[in-house]
Length: 57
Image (cartoon, rainbow, N blue to C red; front, side, top):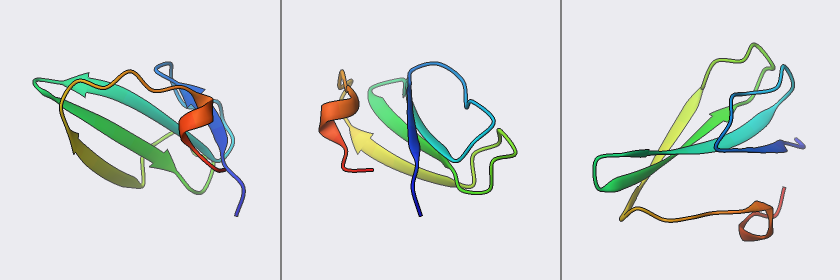
């Protein structure tokens, strides 16, 4: 499955991965079916600044 990197913006209507800061965590939100809703959530400790080079999609 290929995912597009959406950065800290919204899902783009295709399978995509985006991130956001929530408190002192960074959340990775993954839309696996293209409906612009997160189907998976990964929580990382700390407020990380991520870019497309941080992922192999």
